Amino acid sequence: MLVEDNNIKFLGDEIHCKLDIYPPFVMIDSFEVNLIEKAATSTLRLHQDAWYFKSHLPGERVFPASLLTESMLQTMVLLLYSLFGHGQERSFITNISIKIRKKVEPGMEVLNECELVSEKRGIYKLKAVAKTLEGNVAEGVFDYASPRFMPTPVTQTKYDND
Image (cartoon, rainbow, N blue to C red; front, top):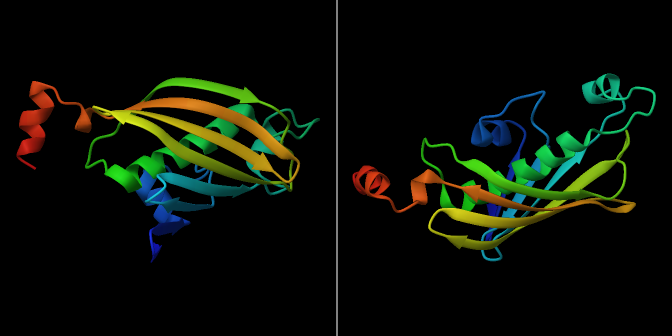
């Protein structure tokens, strides 16, 4: 982890450990968060020989939209973990609204940009955009819930003791 001014950068194994997600399902190569702006970016280089191009529409060689969405989600979760932590608790996505604009192909690099739009009592709303050199390829709005930060009698008692 590299820390400069109000930015934190993660690479490789640091991403895996923070997310508790491991290859081949890690869908980001690098991650950077700006703590002041509550925004983050990540990148994913789509190698020509990657497993998903061999498994998903091999005649067309198109990056699956579900994995593009996962890449955006992993960026979003790392942003929230960097801002608020998560203890040992896992949180969950409660709503996804995404629009796929263009196909993504081998050799491209995807840049995900994510920002926290609002937060209230353990519910977070985030916006994300996935881009390549050809422009925006996907845009989404996501809701995320963290039991750790929801003020219920059970969570208050549990976390007051942490």
